[in-house]
Image (cartoon, helix red, strand yellow):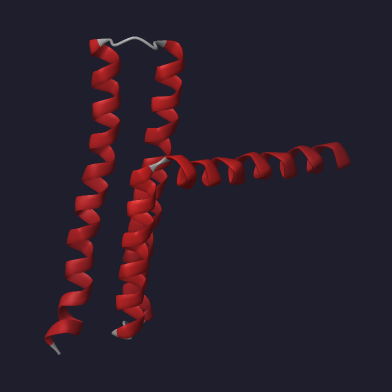
Length: 120
């Protein structure tokens, strides 16, 4: 049981290292984090209802999670195929597109959440 718990704790350490690496090396993750800070500050300033925080939090998680997966895919593909290859480019572009879809959806969600507060 102790060995199992030790392995689980190490796994959390690896995950936190990955999060730190994401923010250290990914300019886009830093931009997303800045957007989260701005949206959070606006939500606090406008005193939005706790129920309106739920879709915003989901968007925060989705965008950062996809950004992390995109970075992991890019690291893996760069290792497996360091030279230029059209299929590697397609994979990287598609993964980046997934992040962009989530980011655009998050902007739309923020507009829907904040509009009633700004109109009041």
